[in-house]
Image (cartoon, rainbow, N blue to C red; front, side):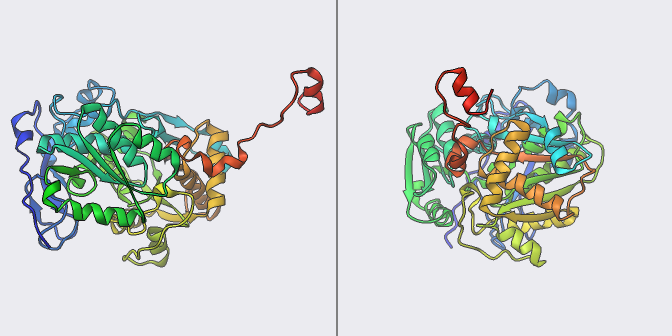
Length: 430
């Protein structure tokens, strides 16, 4: 395996207005530490790297500082590895999305405690990917990259292309060629380079990993390859916002969709860091993961009681979750098991019903990934695997307009009538 020297993160030291709390890159497998830079794999065991933090630096962040910050994810800059200088941030008004109390959904599912929907479809490109991309491209700028790239199942492609267009940075985005047309169009409209690959997301990701080692791509930051440790940290802002929106406290449990498994683990990490920083009281919470039955390698491993996640060939309508070889699968298993939570998978018909259930009880139109999450929530209730007396946050991470074909058969008018009272009466509407 050819190793490239990582870009030293000197720009961060040159321009901060407050110190970064990030201290090192830490291997999630063996614990080896490396200097902050553009590196994603451990040279000792080839395990994935994540950002390690100085606990004392986190503890210096106060609620008052956060609340005085911008009404975006950058209010949490003191808890993130990059973006301490406003001059280097990629700002797209991402974050601070609605936390909606879903009383009608709670009633229908038999909850006696509140259910909250964290609705990240309200982000600029209508998915939570705007969070990870804002942090990743900020890191790319601070690290000296000149072009941005990604492998994507669709939503990340939308976000990378949009953010690059906003700051005038060239982009090259790689996607499976059979993605939903809405996602392809939304990526192409921003004017960057869009490459369709004849294969699955795992094929796309493999190609991007290879390209990141090529000399021609030396100055290209692949958000989910060579700058993945920074990219992944953007998901923590979901957890930070939920705690702040609940009045600086943590919910008793949360349910999140899983593709790679990264977002679920980073929300869990966010809650832990809030406790470490003294921003919330010490608490316990349970973590629940949701997958499509067409691509459920993590949930399958959970049900089998094993630690190894066996790759699968994805099928089904929830294409944004179709990662057959999920990089963070083992860590998602660890997070769920350690918390006493659970995982489940649901089929396409259940996903469609989950979309409708959320829409008719909350007015939130979710993508197929949101349908997965709501359908899994219902399934966990029916199986008695989730406590309906505990306050619960459910993460809706994408907008339903991105996958409208999934429920197109239910999109017809209730009736088509002439513009007359007679027509109303004959249709039983008057």
